[in-house]
Image (cartoon, rainbow, N blue to C red):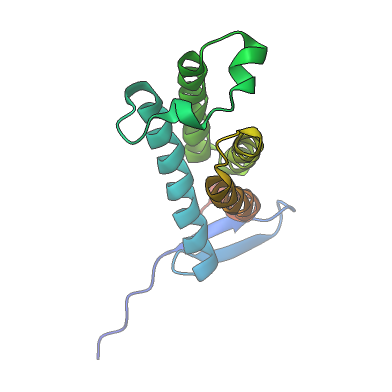
Length: 153
């Protein structure tokens, strides 16, 4: 009878370089880490690029009017800058998820703050982005376990 396929082990170095923990790529925790990583690469990059085209939505409407007034810049110019930052943050998650997860998490909390001071009351989106920030922080925590230098088993 054929044996079920098992993913090859991925050796993960623990905090102590002398200890090595073997983690299988079919473990639920590892898969959750990778799912979150893909999501937090794709979402910021797609949203960031769309700040230049406004194909998904007119992003300017989400910016609290107070922000451009304080910074003396148009809402659209500010959102273009936001788009650049989001693309960079998404790419950071791709190459350094332990750092990128925290960057995206705190960035999302900044978006939440902006949405709360917006008189248009985008509180539903603020709640969604708060939940996303929790996911980004979870990614960063999982990355501290899985995103380390891989060693041969």
